[in-house]
Image 1: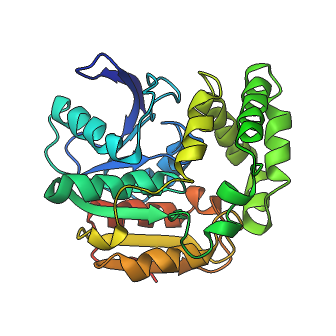
Image 2 (image 1 turned 135 degrees about the horizontal axis):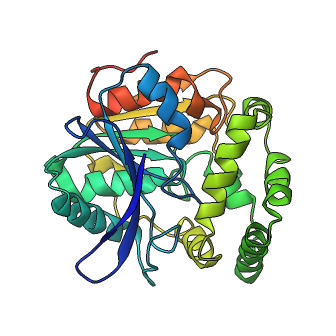
Image 3 (image 1 turned 120 degrees about the vertical axis):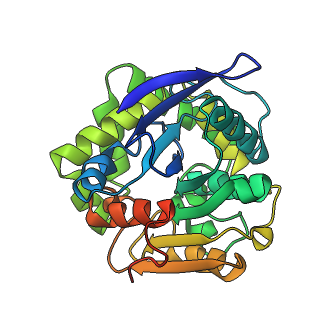
Length: 292
């Protein structure tokens, strides 16, 4: 994995991690909430073992990891950053893959960049606030209903991560998990991955997570029904953090979409399995239909 940063024209930095053959189809990965460019690392081994021909590039969103904060940003600002980064890297067309909270950013890229985005992949994706299942999502139901308390909650998380109490923070997070996700977190490799990715997410403190948490409670600024790019969705039927109803809601509204439901999979338990290789392969265009 190449771990570096790219400087945009306005002077901001975008933290970036990439792996895969340099001449392979490009998959731009949009990390979850909160998250970092290191998030797809858990899938790297299985993708390489399956010889999936894809160049996966993940960027930290503003304020996370190594990326400069961008105060006042909206979902629709992200496509411009991705387009500029792709220009600087000499990449013309690419697919986008979003997991969990990153799904909104992946769909925003398809909405704004048009034919430059060849296809979209969404795994365990969130929907707009009024979408089916979102009121039960941990994204909405987990934090306090009071904005000032939500900000305090994120500050406490960041403080724990940055004062060597990250394992305590993770233990509290695992306590909210069920089934496949909790089982996955018992694996040392998954625990180590989550610890590294989560720590990097809060490298600059809580500001990015606190701000972005409010974005998910606001209108997206675009309509999924207007997205014409081929979109594949995958979602675990046992996902406790984002219910399967949300994936079905999105699939019903995105015109050129296909939904694959994974029996008994959770929110991220898929990431170190063969299913991760299927996701990357389909999003990169190596198969026209996802495994069902």
